[in-house]
Length: 203
Ligand code: GTP
Ligand code: MG
Image (tube, rainbow, N blue to C red; front, side):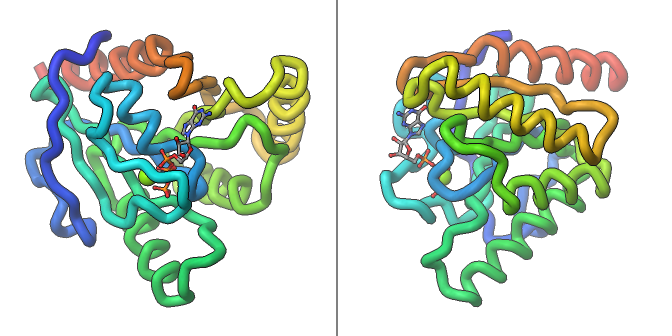
């Protein structure tokens, strides 16, 4: 699959304000600063489509980008930003969980994890929540340009072993580097395959 057009549509403060056209959507979530917005720019090949920042806590709204006039990429605020106030954290948490649980057209939620780190409780808790709620999701290990292959393999097997303690099957796993443009085609092809099955069911 290739992306031929990508345009910003709307930033929403809550689920009820999101687009109502029912097109399939693919959302990106993960800890603040993990590289969600950068990955979206890399996938779409549009430099500043999603706003990025070296400081965590940049994305604070639900942002819809229309792709190929057929489906959406959704940039979500990160979780686990320690410096945010309690009320900001609670507000963002409600916004994101509402979206994840109730958004029927959510075709896949990509959970981004920093490839440099071993499994963190906040990510594992979120992954467990997705499993319990039966939300379709995949994992994306980001920033692979910042770690050696060997170190990454160790972190990855740590993650897999931890997940296999609770689940029989592993979710689909991808790796990416927005700086080196790694992992782009694999992610786009995965999205393309899901879209094909959605659009053929509708036809
Ligand atoms: P919030 O919106 O705050 O939740 O963050 P985010 O997850 O959207 O992260 P963002 O894309 O804004 O990137 C955070 C920082 O990481 C920026 O300084 C990016 O340049 C950097 N970054 C993102 N992806 C990569 C990557 O693949 N490699 C490297 N080296 N840096 C990256
Ligand atoms: Mg962001």
